[in-house]
Image (tube, rainbow over all chains, first blue to last red; front, side, top):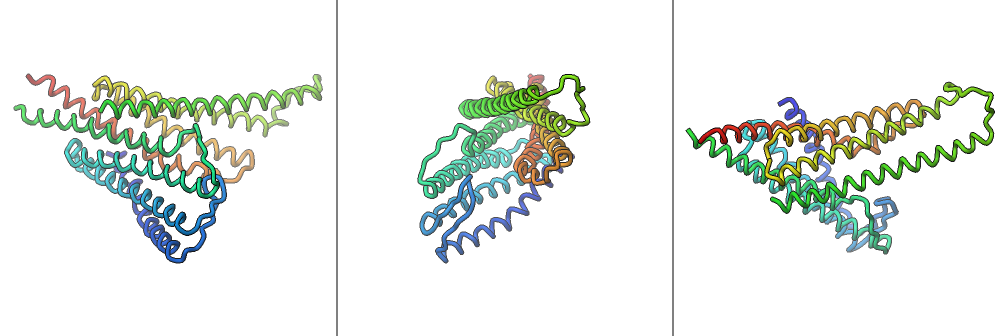
Length: 166
Length: 174
């Protein structure tokens, strides 16, 4: 229970810090799209210089990715709340775990596409790397949540069988 | 279920192989650099002069801290191998065995040890080798993700233990 409380506190802190960051990011996306200013920053190991349509697409994709992560964090908080109520193997937890898995995989794919596009537009080259990338890491995390949801579903069936047996 | 477990197993293997190859490459590079330094030292060394630890304190500190970093990075590979054990058990259908909950605990412990070790070693190096404290920025990801992940694994170990109790009760009921 101590560990659960500690994890809940950490997740809550990250959640409360993420919400203002999401709003600031949204404001930034709208401002950059509205004013049509060029965006120059050091990113992905080089100088990124984007403007116009490319900038809007890059920013929107990054915003959606960030939003998906925040939503999965929100669902994870709900899962932890259920655990706190000692509702371990119920449909709500299983449904949330399944959704978190799918969201994280989607966010990983979007992040990969965004980085690929920004790299291509900025440096006009396609790079292939053998080191573990976001797609692999977030794909792994997402698949882990999917596996967890299925294992929890089996535990729920066991629990229901147990409760039916007198 | 099986396809997800198999995908996860492949991803874990890729992570283990890449982490191990990066670590081995770094160890080899460190060994080669030391050998080159040794050759330079041997060319001008005075054989009558005893080796002084005090005189070469900084070098010894650097060697010790680098070796400690190699051990700490090995902890991550250790954690991944236990994660692979969990996946193998799940694939076999042994979801709620003691092996699974023990492996979850081991992964959690490895993550916690890795993070603490990283902060301690980098903290010592900041003071002894006069580095600045900007290393915190470098390991922000590890600090943000690995501690919650470790706590998550500890909780999963407890949950799987509870599921095992349910299964045992179920098996006893005819």
